[in-house]
Structure formats: structure tokens, C-alpha cells
Image (cartoon, rainbow, N blue to C red; front, top):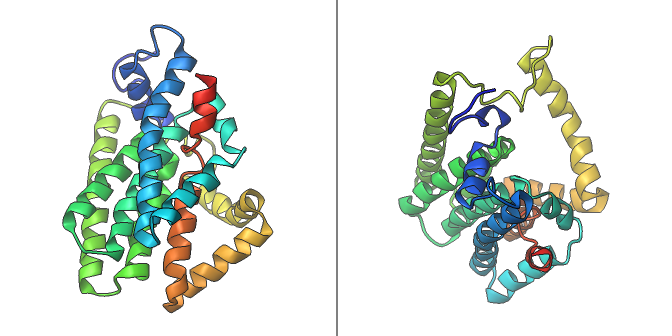
Length: 256
């Protein structure tokens, strides 16, 4: 059994372990303390939801987004388990917020902050890798010009550079950072990826339901065609989706 600061790197959630250790979860009441740690982190997610809603609508839009999330009973399931999904999703919604600021300005500070937020999210939960597409969506929605493309390139370069450096250190120490994401089998990684990609539509429909999936597809088509409606809809919807794990404040408080 391996020990050390990277002992759980192969599980794809090393940063979550560090977070819980920082709060002393390994010493006493690990589940309770892990929930408390998640509570502190998800407050950042709540703030990001409000901020994104205000950017794309107004302060009432931010409040409404939080109320929608709080009213969802499905989120309580993840909270009870005290998983790394909660802080990971909070980091993702922070990245969404920094990308949404592209609707108001083009700032490379936001690109740097996006890259750091996505790096932290990947360290907390490796399955957040698909959210590296957020800057591309932001450019389509808000800044279809050369400066917008440069911003997205900078944001992705920072995020990819940080996560590549982390993976390099993990591999150098003898761990496989993708061990849990792509489990060992006789089938190649590419074949596994293709099978999971083929299952994705069914998973999306089962998670969101048919009506909401149809609305999302319409919004995405509108986004690709340059429709102004999609700018707010896609980002607000993505905001709600990303926060579906971390933002369940009342349930967490009641269980403390």
C-alpha cells in the first residue's frame, strides 16, 4: 500500500483528499468534517452562481438561479455521501463565471483565473475534463473575433499546462492519473472512449429528461448559428448544470 502526498492520485481525486486532510477529516469524524469542508468550498460555487446570473441578466437572475438549485432534491444525494464531486463542481462553476465575464470584457486575468479554476477542478475530480470546452462556448456566445479567440487560447493553454504538469509529476512518482477514468482491461483506451461516447446521448437524456434535452439542443443550435437567445440560455443552463452537485446549502446546513 503506497503512502505519501500522492497516494490517491490514481483515484482521480487527489485534491479532494488534500482538502479533507486540511480540515482534519482523517483524525476524527471523517464524514462530518468532509461535509463541513465541502460546505466552505461550495459557498464559492454559490457566489459564482449569483455572479454569473448577474452578468447574464441581473441580480434577480442570480438569485433565481440559486433558488432553482436549492429546490432540487436530487442534489441531496451527493451531499450525503460527502464526495469530491461537491468541491469539483464548485471549481467548475467558478470557471464558468470567469468565462461568462467575457460577455462584458476581454481580460487575460479572467483567462488565468479560468485556467486555475479548471486545473483545481480536474485535481478534485478527473471527470471534469470535458469542461475544458467552456472557453470555446464563451467565444461562440460572446466574442466571435480574434481577441476572443486569443482569450480562449490563453485560458486553455493555462489550464492544459497546469494539468499536464500535474499529470507529469504524478506519472513521474509512479502513479497512473487515468487509472480510474479508464480502468485496465484487454480493450484499448480508444475503444473504451468510443463506446462511452456512443452511450453519451442516452446518458444525457436519462439525466436531464427529454423536454430539457430538446430545449438544450435548440439552444446549442441557436448558439452555433449566432442567435442572441442562446448566449444567456446556454450559459445560464450550464451554470445550473455545473452547480447541480455543489450548491445544496440548506441540506448541508441541516445535517451539520
